[in-house]
Image (cartoon, rainbow, N blue to C red; front, side):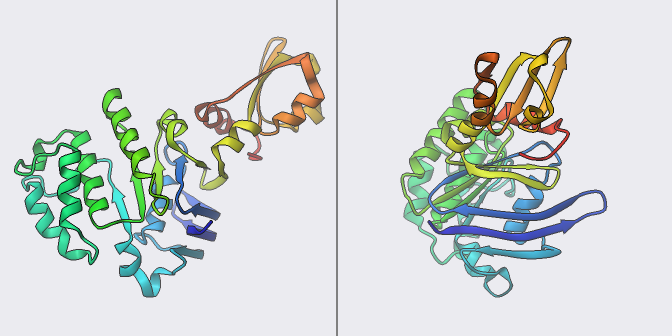
Length: 289
């Protein structure tokens, strides 16, 4: 399967934060969810993908090409869906089309008007009158109208009511029936990713802790609960984070099979959510995720 994006040993340094030695591959035709706490490095990573920032070290390729000599070609093939209105607020969709369409050689008026109709967006009303959900649909319609192959979404469901979030996720699932299209989806609402994501990339403190299929994540990780007297150093080395209260403990492991074989019915092992992993990993003493 082709890599749409490749980061090789990429670092970006700021005064009080750094992305460190990032290695990342985004596969064609899949939905990759991008999760991490505020300040973990999600926005910086996405800006590097868009060439809005340049790496201090390492190599970035998009569609197998470097930005240095191929920026226009690369950006023709990318659609970025913002989490807020980035258009002139007094313009309507007809006016926005006149501005944006000439910038893309693959622009299709038919697709534009088809998506506007599908998303039930008014053509003649100023975008400042649109709800946040309508603004999100507007960004998506524009991305799809120039036949973007790689769609990047930054917190697309934040601030949307549950019904509209469900509708947007259904739209995205329908779009992904085209196996040539790739979606990279940054969000804090991890339950959304559990509905539609194929792969999960988890970033913490400027480092990628894992980048793998959601199925593998669900199989490797577990919450382990039991009596603290079963713990020893060997067992604790299988945990990312351990919390103790009186005689009990609960821990996050990324090696569920090893813990299951070692402790058997001495502990209770539960499935974890992405939110559980983010919570426990944030307080981890060691970064062996």
